[in-house]
Image 1 (cartoon, rainbow, N blue to C red):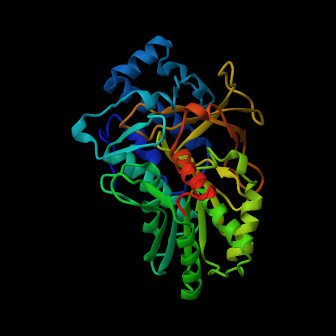
Image 2 (cartoon, one colour; image 1 turned 90 degrees about the horizontal axis):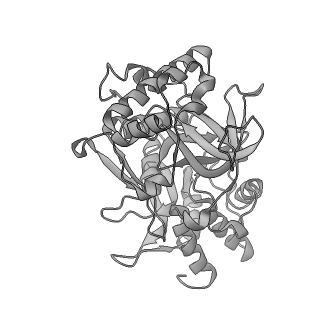
Length: 389
């Protein structure tokens, strides 16, 4: 994929960083490159966005404060919720190639705008991570069960866009959507019985199966299969489960990830090493994917900080706080340092893998920050109460 930043002279270091095709290749040189790319990205957005320039001036920030990779905490951060109430861009409307939203039931929607460079470079990162794990199989037909929204005309939901994009890494034999589109004005319905029938069909076809989307829907499908005494299935060993979206809105029904993975192995026969979780957001499209040890590895295109929930000061390794994503890749919106509502713990690299990782331990303020997963949870509630089955 041949990609070029909007202005190569101003963003040359951003270009170099995002052209590294080994996503976990940490080194002192790449740390220096990351810092240089951040400086260029900051200057780009200060020039293009009056809002971001004012933010930097208000906080007394200049690039002169970025002397080492350890100074990233000095960069002004923006709360993810800010994008739910404000439209902020660093590009003209003519340069927008994609407009995605997160979705909720409170009317709060993140409005994220992407130019060709931003969305394509993020997709290329995903491709390099899939290649790293040997998940790109262009010669192997594959069946798909997507625990996400069946597309509707004009849909802009980030989750649906992502899951459909992931189908490009292995040729499609058949696709089933768990959240069926019921027609204009009727929304979506959780089709649990259609999911079960698809699993049965996929078993007989003996092709690899890829399952993407919300873990809660997969869990309720497998739990129902077990509750009715259904004989466990044996899907192809090269099948892949790649989940994302969390349990937001269904936390009281959430189970530990290890339990979900055990249920998958029991009911579908897919081995543990082929079960992965992914983490990301429409406000920050860098992909964070579990390794075989089920740790969210941080690719070299980003860095993270953990901030104290009261003071917002950076915390040392091993402590719980707000998750702060930092990356220079985005040129369309000044979202280079985004503070999420997720609570997490940062861990440095270990003897088995030099790349650092993080674990998600919860989420703050979900009552006023409903996302695609929360909207989806209402469909689960309908199923659990006998409505929409």
